[in-house]
Length: 317
Image 1 (tube, rainbow, N blue to C red):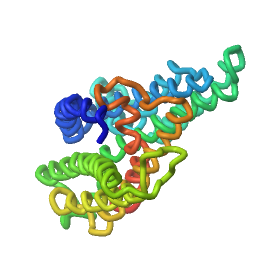
Image 2: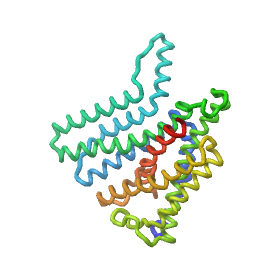
Image 3: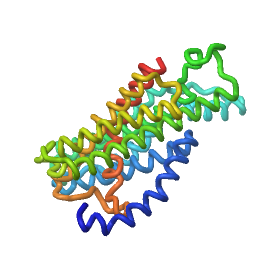
Image 4: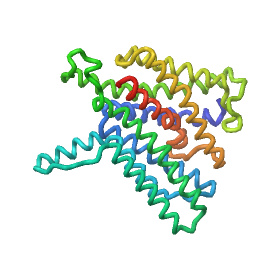
């Protein structure tokens, strides 16, 4: 570890000691609390991505992108909102016809795309092609991908097939509480797997790294470090299955660990490519000792869609 890394270690540990319990609490609480957490890191990560793009001469529509990004995040908690809104108006004798979640998300993205293109028609700043591309890419890559993390949490209990896991075909209050815990533990286990993967990859690379993984993008990463991270991610998910994720089968835990070990490290490389292209070390300095929000959650951005698709379409199907 370098001298600068040692100097920043107390700040890193201090921030982690405060942030990790709050993140775990939001994940376990679920609902609007977890949505608020994800929307926050999504919006800040998107802001940092747009700043990186500006360093390369792009002029993304920041405000439009961040507002639409929030609405895209909101779309992934739409079923919960639909129930709340419908119940509120039903109590007043008003019955609403509402979009489905997919209709709402598609509507938002289509309107967003048309607005960006029409605004760029009249702008005279920079390249309209580059401006439009970076504005849309940020929302699709960050807001949409983070939204799938919200969807993963919302599967518990929304979308959870109780008939598949309980013999009676329905869940009582105790079992519903168990399902809610599974949802929180799934998110916490995913985060723990990512963090342990990153830590193992770093220290494994420092101790045993000899062969560069992708020197043009990230000079310090090695194949040996990546292997340590990969194995640690799988072992973490296997341990999580034993301790708290009883609904997962053995091969499900292994596959989720594979997703973290492979796609988490790819997500880190993708962000490193953006930063190297922009000539910066960190996406921002918003988190003392840790860089930016996109720096801290770059793996989560890329892992979340794969985890959501697998849990929804395979584990819970």
